Image (cartoon, rainbow, N blue to C red; front, side, top):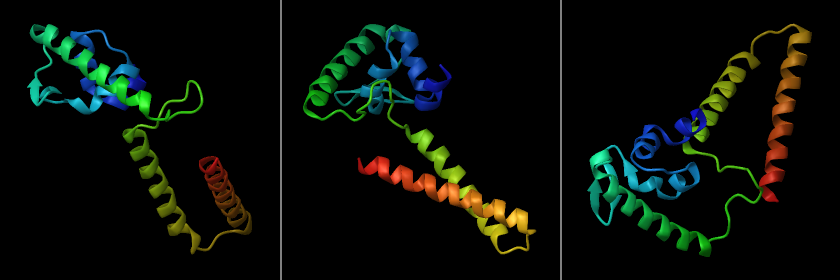
Length: 140
């Protein structure tokens, strides 16, 4: 549930209270869901229990359209049980990387004891080596 909240935010749970939907299905229609409700055919349907039949019908149509589209497209994740990186996950990674780079830039020109400088350089080397490994994975 925490992973789904991080990936989708509260809208997933709002919809799940009105009708049964799993994370895979929600990913297919997530672009149609926002604070106002479910956008279907140019109409915004508020996600409330009183609208459950309309919401369920709209979701069924959206999923049917998404399935037709995904049958034409090649699969995004090539390995079983590997989820696509969410926008929130990517934003967190960017923030952490930016903070790490800024910290390294702050300390790299300051005086360091030899063992501390060696540790600093080893850490940078590991980061560069890992980045190279990631590049190799992307190319495959």
